[in-house]
Length: 240
Image (cartoon, rainbow, N blue to C red):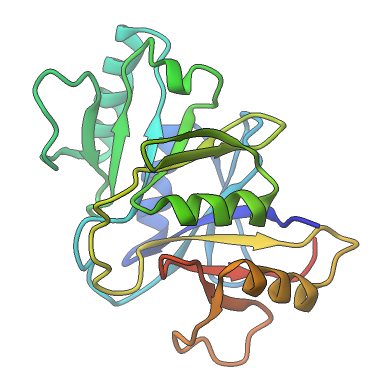
């Protein structure tokens, strides 16, 4: 039985400040969390939340995961960019070409994201967060398809993408060359078995698919920290 995607988690120097930025961009709601994690709950039907947890570590380089935000018109794209800049984003150059229609920005802590132009066919059937866009191999796309039970919606030229049967955000991997990992990822996924599932059985299943146990200093916690076949950290929570 596949896991559910529960949250996309940001490590943040100022979790409340970063959550406030993303709440303004996405029009999601900040909710209280008993574990000192600032949480954004969606109000647009998105199936996962966004969590912001305290860290003292510096961002080691370009993130291996970022959001692609969709637009229904050129005016909406401009409005999203303007709103993000007003909230504290900035334009950045990650090697995008002038003729490309998307706008590359960074949030107040330097986390990259893209505002995609209207008419993008790949993101035509998605939510405002059109894609969780990842730097990764074809193998890891296959892994996450099995882990979440999301079918492949793209598998060509070593690029892969998956999407929940219920729709919403896609997850995509750009294929080689994959940038070398230089430290713990700034963003990671939290997944969990369904309510009638078993955490240890799910961990064992994920290991059989190519995941590995890792120690990032988490200590005695209720979740299990793992790495996917590309070495990207993720957490397996208790059933819910």
